[in-house]
Length: 171
Image (cartoon, rainbow, N blue to C red; front, top):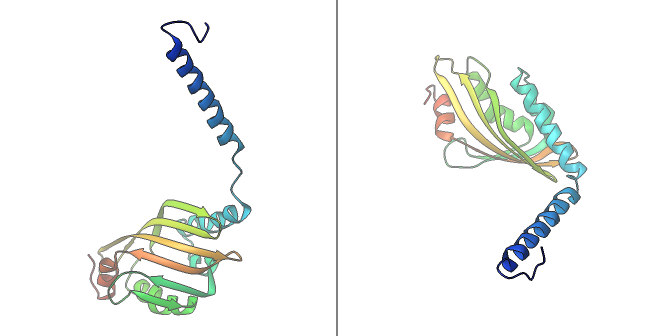
């Protein structure tokens, strides 16, 4: 059917335009480069560590964090602030919480995004406090990876729930 035929000119040209646009889009999607090796490696490191943690592992922080990590907990409250080094984080944030829990926190990974040196993790954690109450929290961690380890982390979480466990209660 010719493009200049009366009554169908716009429809035929419209179909041709859509077919051309679709073909170009398919070509662009197929021709897009794969994620850079750094992105894939960082995503795999963090994803593997989360899978091990969810399966009962207890070495996530040792596996992922650089010894001199700078960990920032955003928000307001007693637990917000900057922790300098893995040991500082473990001593002042992780161990005090763990001491008030009867069970370890088990993560459920919701989303893992990576681009270059950055990995963003959205996860939910559940545990039981030493008083028998549930502890649940949602977290978003933004990790800046360097040489296969997190050199900087910015953490977002419900600090009210976290601080309530530290005070001996649960929300």
